[in-house]
Image (cartoon, rainbow, N blue to C red; front, side):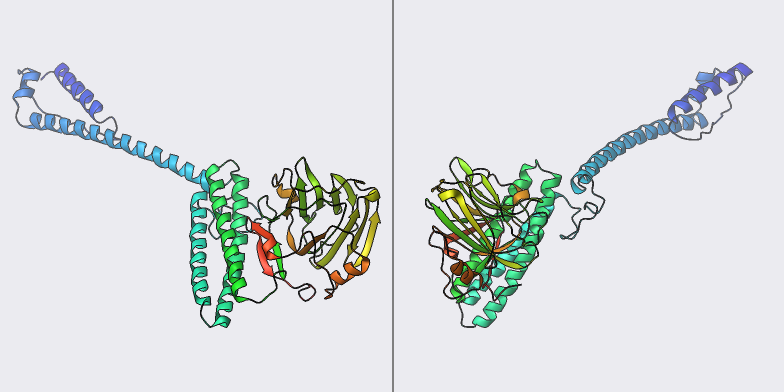
Length: 423
């Protein structure tokens, strides 16, 4: 075989091997001897030995290359899908500004592993609340027996568990709202959680009525968080009033401002009668959207008794803290009677009739014994209220009884006796 034939043969092999093994790192060449006077192609076809093996090897290599190409393409597609899923999971698990733990810097993790998605977290909360509900049902059945001491003990344990769970649920819900304010599904689940909490507290109240002997007015409302959905509401409106006295027990250490202990709105006027301490401003009383600043200092975490009196004549008002007059004034909405057919809300400031709550104005703390009269109380009557004297009168327009108040959004109801429960 002359030099040109060898070159042609080797070139042919090189082309075949390069096209067949282009995805491999190193290759090797197989040389086969051919008689000098025989045509190269004929010799290759007729030779059933090494040439046939070479052909088989080339075909196998080509098939292997094609199979590996297909495998690589499938693996690339799988990697792309996994990467996409991982990105979606990370975006759901880690809110903006949060680290791998799922918490914002400086925040406390009250719910354990919160790096899971929103839906999973709320689903677990729902299961926990369902467990509490089952325990409550068992308690209700057990309380029908004769062992009232053990039943009361179980009830107290359950109430503590619900209160702790409530704070964690509401804290988590607030975090989810901040990170995903437009998530409709999260909002629906939050409403379900709130509804379950409210139902639990109502059922506990009913249970307490059946087993405890406490008077109907010996209770307090607790608002643990500053939200726009936790509140209580009077079941009936106020009448038209040309003078009034409003008194209550209050405890809070919220800052800045304790929020809105109560607000009364009527059609056409959301600020008909409001008690509010907002931001760094002092506590104020609003009547028909007119304002008077009150000399109260209460955000020390202790119980305080507050009373405010007002008459439409010259708009004269007086403010009492712990039975002592702290200030007075005049020209506060003079000759404007308090209008009827309104909504009295505890714990929130109303921007619309019965709604339009703003979390920044919400009350945080505890309040009890809110009573309203359609007359100006005397200094002696106010002192009797502040010192829990047996002669203290009850409100003739609104009296503090459980049947007059309903709670929403997770506000809690506890036993409270003025003066005996102080601080």
